[in-house]
Figure (cartoon, rainbow, N blue to C red):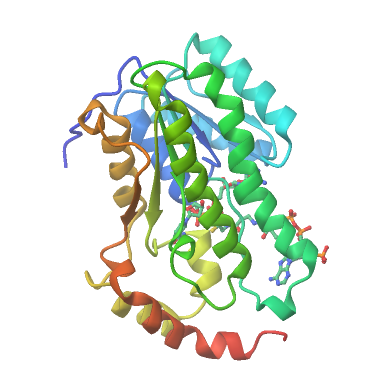
Length: 272
Ligand code: NAP
Ligand code: COA
């Protein structure tokens, strides 16, 4: 497929961009001509991603290591990148943590960790990037998850956190719309070859049940999500803001029950 979008002269920050879906998004923006920066906790993953972004064409690729739970570190790192580039145009925020655990088998700290990474972390990122984005054409994309809308056993922490992420998207669309800043959420369906799927579909039986639960009968790819991000960040989406958009092969239209059936054995084995 040829690249249908041109992001030359656009600067893109991808938070949590050093692996999986978010790294795919970062590399796709780089291939579309953007200058791209990534943030995650592990310095070596940041370094490795910068090299690959350069190989994808983003000569000015940058990055820094920080935990989204640390507001000051995120704010300072973002400010440094915006100053080095002179401007910021697009932010994708997708740092997240997940592990399957029933509510009674999870400590308060386990619940807190996911809330603090996914929800509070998103808030920190929003506060850090906004001062550099106050202009028409600026675009923010929060990476949500089906758990925001579909309750899943073993996922109370993620369900609560991602529902909050989508309400941040919808609220900030009201607060920032007058300046022309657009903000949307993408809800990826099950995406193959990712850490998230390794954790939630750890064996072939569950993988097969997941695939069967998707109307398009396959898991998604990181390209499926990255291509949706290109569209949402482009001027072709200039009237879309406050939207929560599933990119999931139709999974949200009824897959939950089937996936629940596939996960039953895994849930039985979890501590109560
Ligand atoms: P992944 O490969 O584990 O990516 C998570 C990224 O976030 C990594 O770059 C990780 O790098 C970073 N990160 C984690 N905790 C962080 C923290 N506290 N501070 C800063 N960075 C942090 O996961 P994935 O499966 O591709 O998922 C990516 C996004 O898609 C997540 O938002 C997830 O909820 C969403 N999603 C995934 C699926 C799926 O099928 N995989 C489906 C729906 C939604 P470090 O370890 O270096 O920090
Ligand atoms: N079942 C139950 N509780 C678990 C757990 C599991 N599988 N994994 C972690 N926890 C609990 C820990 O026991 C700890 O609670 P405690 O202090 O009461 O014992 C708490 O969660 C925090 O664990 P810790 O390892 O200190 O957290 P962290 O901040 O270093 O890491 C995680 C956060 C747990 C989310 C970790 O899995 C992570 O970094 N994930 C990022 C990658 C990822 O999840 N990718 C998929 C994205 S969809």
